[in-house]
Every structure is written in C-alpha cells, then in structure tokens.
Length: 323
Ligand SMILES: NC(=O)c1ccc[n+]([C@@H]2O[C@H](COP(=O)([O-])OP(=O)(O)OC[C@H]3O[C@@H](n4cnc5c(N)ncnc54)[C@H](O)[C@@H]3O)[C@@H](O)[C@H]2O)c1
Image (tube, helix red, strand yellow):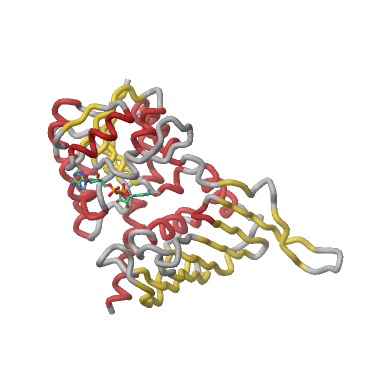
C-alpha cells in the first residue's frame, strides 16, 4: 500500500472541495479515491489550512515537509504551493535523504532557467522522478485529440486562435503546454504586445502571435475584470477543433460537400464531447501504476523535459515582451 503527501493545502489541494460528491478536481481527494493509496499526509505553512484539509481527507498533519519526509516516508508528494515556491520545494524534497520516489508538482514547474537546470540535474542524479500537473495531458479526451491531429483525417493546421486570460505564464502555461502536447512541436512566439495586468504582479496577460509547425497561432489576452475565458479554435485543411469553456467542451467539425457542392463543416458527434472529466483522477491512477511497476516510460509525456520545453516557450514570450 502506498503513502501520499500534499504540501500546500489550498484550493487545488482540496481544502474547498466537497468530499461527499463523486466529481473530483483536487490532489487530496484524488489520492483518497484511489484504493492503492492507503495513507495521506498534509503540510501547509498555515497549520489551520492543513488541519482543515486533514478533517475532510482523513490525513495526518505535519508542521514541515522535513517532518513529513522523516516521519511519514511518502512514496509520492504533491506540491500545491503558490507558483513562486514550486522550484524551491521541489529541490528541497529531491535533495533530502528520504526523498519520495515521485513528485507531482503543480504548474508552472519553475520561474527561471537556472531553476529548471537545477531540477533536471537533481532528477538525473537522484532517485526521484518529477511530473507536472499540466492538467490536459492527463485527460483522455485531450489525448484523443492528439491522436486525431497526428492522424491524417483533418490534414495540416492552417491557423489557430486562442482567447485566454490570467497572465502569460500563470494561465498561458496551460495553452502553450496543450499546443505543444497536441502538435508535438514547439510554439514559436514572434510578436508580443501587452494586454493587461493579471493577478500576478510580474506576469501580465500578453497578446502573442506565433507559429507552430509553420501555421500561424494568435493568442489574444482578455482582461479578467470582465470575465475569465479559455477558448481555442484550430482550423485544419479538412476540419476544425473547438475547445471552449476551458476545454470542458470539445467540438470536432469535419469538412464535407453539401448538396450545393460547397465545402462546409459538419460536427463529428463521435469525436466531440466533454473534456476534462477528472484529469486529476487519471493522473493519480498513472502515479500509482508507476509506483507499483517502476516503469519510467509511463511518465515520459508528463515529466520535466516536456515541462521544460513549455517553460522555454513562455520565456521566449517574456523576452520578446521585454525587448
Ligand atoms: N493545474 C491546474 O489546473 C491548477 C488549478 C489551480 C491551481 N493550480 C496551481 O496550484 C498552485 C496552488 O494554487 P491554489 O489555487 O491551490 O492556491 P491557494 O492559495 O488556494 O493555496 C496555496 C496554499 O499553499 C500554502 N503555502 C504557501 N506557501 C507555502 C509553503 N512555502 N509551504 C507550505 N505551504 C505553503 C498556503 O498557506 C495555501 O494554503 C498554484 O501554483 C496554481 O498555479 C493549478
């Protein structure tokens, strides 16, 4: 039986989640729902936050990550602290003599090049593997889109448009990571313009024009003061993929010829449907499979190498903005 730890007991850890409902979005609840995870440990710099989550999740509270590693010896640890803490906590866990075998880190994995280099080096030299919660990678519906795009039925991408909010790095990381996951190619930013501030002082929302595999992509920022949005439209030679409501609604449209001999789009009901059905539950299932089998290949599309490529693209956008 396996033991899991969670550091940072806020929203994504599960402190506000209803544990009585089946639908799950949080780390603690996903661990609790997986029968291979027997015990759960919780750490927060606010003991009250950890205790509140411990009551819901039936977990053990520790005052520090150090205490949790030594006394609880978790097999996997989720890092759910704020963005600017991830790299520091990751490095501290990986350097510890009782380092867990796996760390499941919230996005973005780090903020700077030197942090990424240190984490890759620690992973190469140590026993701990790292995966990052780029949510959509764990979602079977988004995985099916990758297969669809890599097949030939839609043809090549002509161009794409994305409306997003919430900071180029903080929220844009989901868009960039998804695009690079779907197309297995880097998104190259070419032109960047300021849109508006985000909730994160050093991370404005940017308008970004770039290419992926030669096709133009436009990411248009939207001010959160009106509302939050994440909509993606990808136009191919023989169809369209529309992801709306943050990827919860997926529509695939295919080119057909109508009675007037015009080429039009028709919804493919089989390929369309709901996205993001509990990706965290799939992530924890993958985690337990890895811990039980030791098969590192299972982690390949979720690890530091992929997360690093996503961060490199975000840093290119930052550099263009600063220039
Ligand atoms: N993958 C996703 O779709 C997704 C969704 C939401 C949030 N997130 C990410 O999850 C992270 C947490 O977001 P949230 O909304 O849960 O934040 P939150 O503010 O609700 O919770 C953060 C918690 O971490 C604690 N904390 C802060 N610094 C700490 C430290 N050094 N050690 C221990 N505890 C510490 C805080 O007391 C708080 O309880 C962010 O990085 C965010 O980007 C990802």
